[in-house]
Amino acid sequence: MNRSPPIEVNVQSDQSEPAHDDSPGDSSSAGEPVSRFFPYPAALLALTISAFAIGTNEFIIVGLLTPIGTDLGVTVATAGLLVSLYALAVAFGAPVITGLASRVGRRKLLLSLMGLFVAGNVVAAFAPTYELLVLARVLTGLAHGVFFAIGSTIAVDIVRKERESSAVAIMFAGLTVATATGVPLGTYIGQSFGWRTTFWAIVLLGLIGFVSSWVLLPRDLENKEQGSFADQLSALVEGQILLVLAMTAIGYGGTFVAFTYLEPILREISGFEPATVSALLVLYGAGVFVGNLGGGKLSDRFGAVQTLVGLFAVQAVVLAAFTFTASDPTWSIVTVFLLGVVGFANVPPLQTYVVNKAERLAPEAVNVVSGLNIGAFNVGIAVGAYVGGWVTEGGNGLSLVDTPWIGALFVLGGLALTVLSWLLDRRQSSSETASVVASD
Image 1 (cartoon, rainbow, N blue to C red):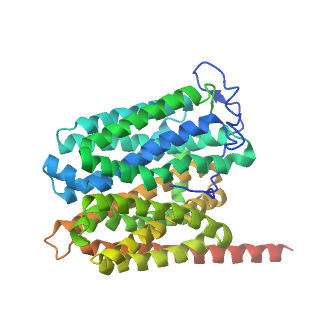
Image 2 (image 1 turned 60 degrees about the horizontal axis):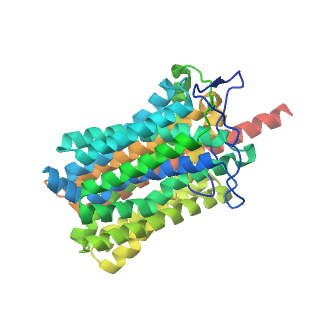
Image 3 (image 1 turned 90 degrees about the vertical axis):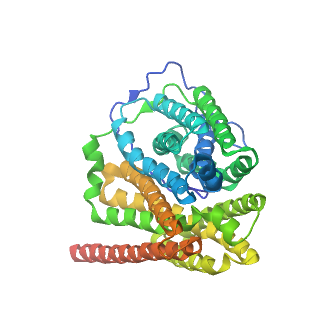
């Protein structure tokens, strides 16, 4: 979930003799820019198109909980588990499958992932039962996590070194555009023509991504040499890295206690019609776009951890305020936009911060740590959506309108962990400075 200005993602490669993808052909034009307006290889467009399809698929359920629940005979809260289970598939699939498949050619692996993505959405479109829809979501979630882990390394390798971060940001821009336009459009399609039609539209997007990747990705991509799977997970013994992963899961996850149920909140509490809800999701997506740009700029200017302290504080306030503004149509519109801004502005500094930590504390496992943080984002989504479902189930004295302030409590937890990590950084910096002075 990254935006421009780009997140600084550093991908380390072993300098030993590279292994090559066994696909035939050549990539002589892989590094040539498309035009002076898009000075990047055409292969990057294929990655961005696929990222758009996958990003649309990730959050499309949020706008379709009510029709899916009605059609398959489950409650809205149960339908909301489709968000949680997808996120868990991403969270556990990204580091595990990426590690286990490290010796498979990246072009072949990426095409296989897009094939799995398309097949999973075909199953979703046909699914006659809730259980089969769950299976379909898990399959596409597995494809999602590994795609972004592998796609990032490909994006870096097909451009010159000075454009590496920009290339990664462009690929993730597909996710940004999906949040801002793909999800609302999919929601409109689902509410107008049935939720299954939305999944057929995602199948079409996935096929376009597959064909684009087949045609445009270089056929002789070098395969990155990796250590053993156990060696790659060695970073998990570093307490400060685990602390940042917890910051990501808890702080980012607070957004999804309320966001997962934003559609029923806007219908049942704010009183908006379905067509208006779709428009408000577009507004939310615009906030996401603005927030990611702003979060990246703030992080570049003030530092990642300092920015996170401020963002989490503001996010907690906005979520708590939505508890009171949701019942007012005018103020709910304002708050929905602000929720989009603050809910996703923390993504660039969180990813930058964990990569910087890994470079300092576990340089042999930077790639895996980056993947683990993607997993942490999705653990946060899963837990947030699950807690939101528990709140909305009833029988506990809580209801839909309580999801925002409970989400704010999660964010405050993330804020506390961020402050702790900041203090540890300052202590370590002071200790290192003292050691340098003493040695002089």
